[in-house]
Image 1 (tube, rainbow, N blue to C red):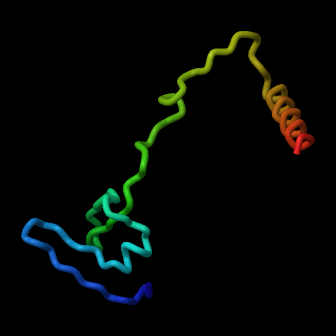
Image 2 (image 1 turned 30 degrees about the horizontal axis):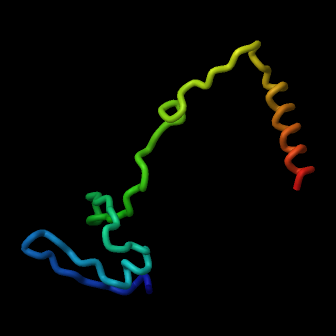
Image 3 (image 1 turned 120 degrees about the vertical axis):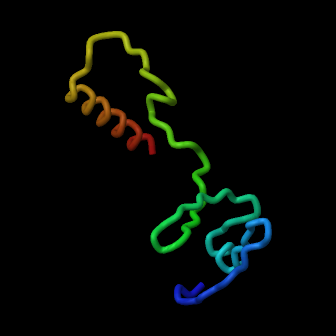
Length: 91
């Protein structure tokens, strides 16, 4: 779809608008796609809503239990390197 192409639509008595087919296809917005509507200084912005709510790692898994002495940064980097080498050798 050309960027300069001007398309129009009409607001229905129920406040509904139909997005032109070329835009829906370009954005891959199928029937039932949820959209976020934002008011901007230039007009109204429509964006596909995220599939999942935003979350933080601690909200998902919480602190993982670990028993033992704390690991140093050098210990962690060495373990990562060891595992990377093991996986590379396997491939």
